[in-house]
Amino acid sequence: MTEQSGGPSLPQERRLVTEIPGPRSRELAARKQAAVAAGVPTVMPVFAQAAGGGVVLDVDGNSFIDFGSGIAVTSVGNSAEAVVRRAGEQLARFTHTCAMIAPYEGYVEVCEELARLTPGDHAKKSVLLNSGAEAVENAVKIARYATGRQAVVVFEHGYHGRTNLTMALTAKDMPYKHGFGPFAPEIYRVPMAYPFRWLTGPENCAEQAAAQVIEKITKEIGTENTAAIVFEPLQGEGGFIEPAKGFLPRIAEFAAAHGIVLVADEIQSGFCRTGQWFACEDEGVVPDLVTTAKGIAGGLPLAAVTGRAELMDAAHVGGLGGTYGGNPVACAAALGAIETMRTLDLPARARRIEEVMKPRLRAMAERFPVIGEVRGRGAMLAVELVKPGTKDPDAATTSAVLAACHRAGLLVLSCGTYGNVLRFLPPLVIGEPLLEEGLDVLEEAFAGV
Ligand SMILES: *Cc1c(COP(=O)(O)O)cnc(C)c1O
Image 1 (tube, rainbow, N blue to C red):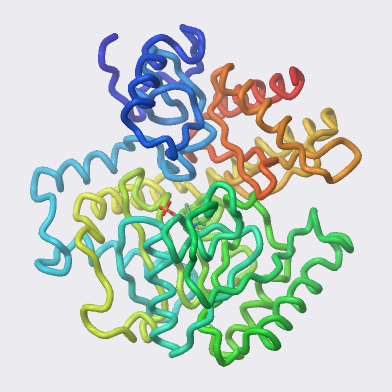
Image 2 (image 1 turned 30 degrees about the vertical axis):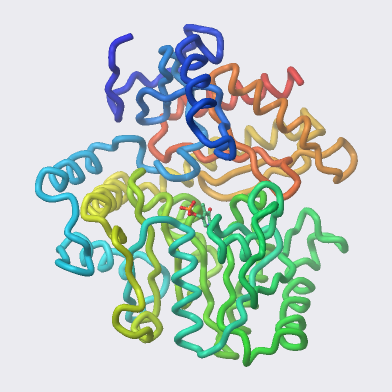
């Protein structure tokens, strides 16, 4: 079939022209099996040919509604106009000099934007990196250097990446950590205020969880040994868990009182996803350091640590960096993505997506008792599936609904410590008719399982 170009001009429709997967995808799957390491998972059984707006087109000509955005990455859409224009111009000018050797304006401009956009009006600086995991690693390096302390506190259900240190920071064994130890030392895991699963009920969750966290840090770890508390303001891979209101402000206050660096991992929740530029803004939490990646550059690999200038300046010259960190093409793409977020007011679009999706998901929860909870904010929404009438996780039905959606032309992802959460991360530029149609497909999938 002829090459189809992607981007916003791609026909915005769900269209199935072959069985799923089609013949061309099956052929590629066989080649993948022979050439690609088995440990690299595949969520969708189809291979992509083009993508843009709210759709992904596969190599057989099937057009899927995109409720995944490549895991919250293409918030501005695939091949967004400003991303292609600015990254394209940069590609033709130069592709790499190494920011540590001959720096360039784009790197500085991205850091200036990050200082403006991230929470808090204190003086801020940034370092640019390649991936989310690398950003989290660097945040820990900076916090340890600046405090002279070693312990790092993380939360149950947290996810921070797949490198050795970030595997240690991540909660879930299978598939992220299993068999890959030993892990980095001086990592301590504390309870998360997970309202749906808090034993004494959601009302007491924030207060009791915060008290447990504070007691653990005070009595078991030692505040004076604690360099950083690393948290996701809205947990991603762990199940789109919104910490009970009041929990994060209490933790932030405790960290500030004890000189502990508060690190917000906004890699999945940041850049307009939750209806605000950053999810921390919801409760007015101002972290000392923020890690960003995913949504930052419209699909090009870029990540950052942004934070208080005095913390960011603590490490010696040469202590931070990397060959590709802040690659000029990725920086140009980030500036194009940020331009798009401003021009189209993507935080408002995320809030509108919530307005359209949440009532429909709630109606589905009424109709299908397997849905135990509807949660999330903006265009970071989820349903948690349980055995009806209990809170026992139902991973089997989750997989069945997922597969039914995929067969019907809707790209959806799952997540959760118990593998029982369907998460919805549509591109923020998705059209409302497609959004409604995607919800129809989801509802039919629930009805069918
Ligand atoms: C995806 C993710 C990471 C890791 O980012 P990579 O780019 O995959 O290394 C870290 N933290 C959170 C919250 C994430 O969602």
